[in-house]
Image: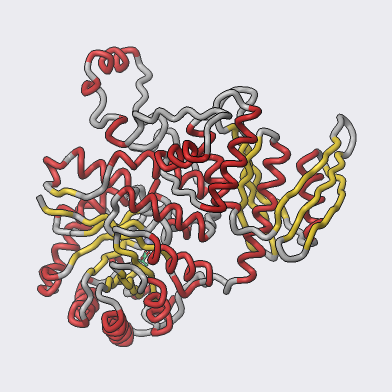
Length: 514
Ligand code: KIV
Ligand code: ZN
């Protein structure tokens, strides 16, 4: 069977989803899990966009073994050199360079012309190839590019040495049959493409990203670009788990195979959901919590007799069965580390120490610490590792018909300890105001969500906030059996993400003219 490569862009396109802002530690953690999942390529980030992106791509290239590690770059020399600086540490580095090729992009976004774009693309691929053994080139908005011109750009990139040509349906505009005809024609017009890997990168604006990608495979695509849980710009990218299970379950139809270990799919989906705060809809194909539930009597009866009557995949195929995690207050650090590894987390050193302390605190108050609790603790500790501010303690007085009053003590890694008090409309508002006063950084709360991690009155509460500082939004997550404390931790985390982002270079959002 023909082998199709799975190129994961959760950490790059996925991270461009509105409201997602992963820390370096969180990205490294996700990359380790992607390696356990055995994807072929991890697009670890866009190194020129910020110090944080550069650091996470460099760390992933250094630490994560197995997959190819790719860094994104526009066709500018500085982007390509920066991407190389970051990916060079990998045993399998790749530079992925891209430029818009549709008239809309060339005229209105890049304010350039067709000839300059071809020359720019060719030069960029040559430069990238002189630095890095493997180069991918993407014509952005390819599906809205006139096919004759697209063929010229692709031929130039192939001629310059691109190993992978990635046809991007950037705005999710194409349809499956149209896309396969388009790709066939492109292959006919560019004979050199046969010697290279043809890749597809589809967005989900019309809900067709998976169908379009699979149509690409049927006409020879050897690489599919995907993201875990389908996250990504706007409506997202093709969902990794749907693509992998479609190709596996319907191998008879597609006649291709992938190297992914499907038993890691459920873990990976939960890890990414926990870290990004993007919940998986219950009815989501493959990894939604209802994907293997049977409600009607007829279905239940059939499944009890033989699962195959109403299931085309089993929960075991995606790793939903077989975890025997049960930890209590007597469990040690090794047991915690092993359990976390089984759940897809590789915690080491200081983070593991802190997760262990949290686990002990929680195990003292909660009868059973479940796999869901452990995942929430791990995600929380990985996410809070980089912050300079730490919530040491808080006190709150709340009563019916009165303003609440809160006092907080917050320490800063470089500047000592600060105390402050404030009043607010309820305990959460009062604590947030007290944090503003203690840190001397004023934020505006734009979103607040609270969930119980498991059932029961002793469940852990998980709070997610979005806070606006200087016109930009920053996310935070907090976990505690006390929901006011969870809220305070989430808010302090958002302050930490904001202050850390001020230290690094600002993110760029729109590619400028080459
Ligand atoms: O959607 C897109 O065009 C992209 C490119 C960078 C491949 O993400
Ligand atoms: Zn994209």
